[in-house]
Image (cartoon, rainbow, N blue to C red):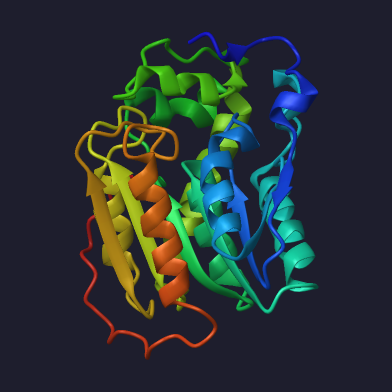
Length: 275
């Protein structure tokens, strides 16, 4: 994929951004080894609908792959929390959305911060599949780097120009990602905020079954809606259904402000764990 790189990014191209002047705040979180531009379209749409939007660069991202290696998942979570703090100081209401790992971070942040009134998680994982994933705790000591494939699962292949990510990722950082997924998976039952889940049915990076598993575990959330996009791949924020994604997220945040409906009654969880 041409927009994965081993070299430093163009700082102007991948920098954190802020849009809008509304009294409602929206934090938008990018994915693992990726950068804020992947959520720029969503930010522009929300800003036009009354939100002040910030998209931080998560710790270790937006520079060179070596920057990611010393960071831990808690550092990525701290970047998200700092953005919430920024908006909470000036806005009446704060919502949070994220793409891929950013969606997982959005769920984790909501589980630990009652100031957040609603969540939108796009293509968010709480588990990853594959033999390599299972041996990462050992593999990280033997293999320093993982080189992702060049296949593109986007229906709109031109949209890849809006995605900028590291062309190699530290295996120890992948282990940190798995730790984040495990922590968040166990926190889902504590989330009370309304949660919108959007996933592309053609996603070749994060199994679309993650969305149903997240929904099943959100037993105390005030409201949950799961939307599957038949044509979209992993990057739903930029793929062919991006306008629908923007509309769905904005409508969700409009419906679910500081005053949320009563929580749903607890549901029985299945004992199986796909991880």
